[in-house]
Image 1: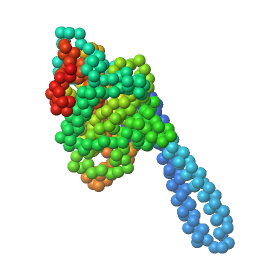
Image 2: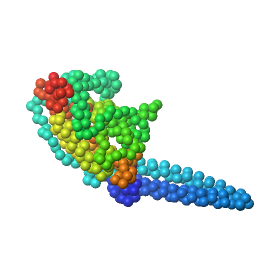
Image 3: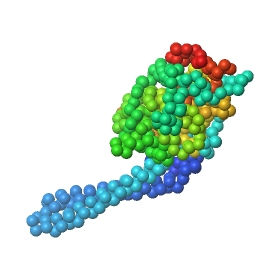
Image 4: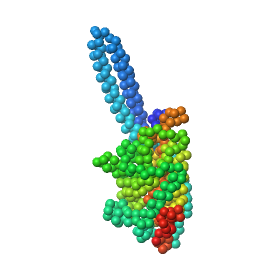
Length: 417
């Protein structure tokens, strides 16, 4: 949730953020009204409770003759207090609903618009030139015994697959390399639960406009996570952290699950857009004033991993309308996919400022010992989709694929034949 104090002092900035996202700026006024109504209800309730307390003292000091009349007045006052408390609860519920309806405030400098309105910040690496007709990742994966989509569909349905033989080793190698890099950069490795409670999923902002993409186990009222960002965000919920010595950094290795609702007909071939994949995700808790610098660090670590697999990529500044509700700013790294003649997202890093931590009650103590809301950030360090770019960019004329040098120790061979 956004900071209500910031909203009261800067309503036009929040309205402009809503416009940048392509969302309703009128929600800002609805929230301001709900905030004013709740504060008025709290004031009314406080005044009546104070009056009730003073009246109680008066009853206690009254003579036997005065007491019956005063007791009658006390009953009337108690009824008013009860009504005021009910109104206060109602006003608080309305405020909570209005508060959760507004996405995080987009950071100044982020481009406005939708999915296609990103800004390219940098191109890295040379796009390969083949003197043969390149194969796509699925044709390569099937011919080399790395991917089995047919039996994945037989066992689980469309958009499921088996990673087989060296394909499984390639995925495990990617994730192991990411884990080693995370540890070397001060992250604590985690294998988190992939089922979370509703309040944790809602706290991270995933039960809003895109809730239809999440698998829900109705009988247990638990959600399958689409990223380990979710359990790692909930890891310190309701806690006060020590952040004066620097950020707390975690890296979560988990399977991820997405229904991909609304994506029918898109990327149905191969493993680009699937229902289950594995990922190593970076997650950081830090002081809000340190969040921008930490965001650049996360992007830098992602770039190190992409350099290790030796694929050409570009870095984009994602437009406001394509940000998740929790993100104030997001940078994606998109790798070149030769057979598609375009770049596809491999990593994403988001600065969520205090939005998630405010919902989840994650705080830290400032220099004066006063609790303040922390900032949270996340970023991809490796995922199954990377295999698409590795196979296509490193393929050779005889149908084999060169294994990036950094992955050879994990895969066990330097060429997939």
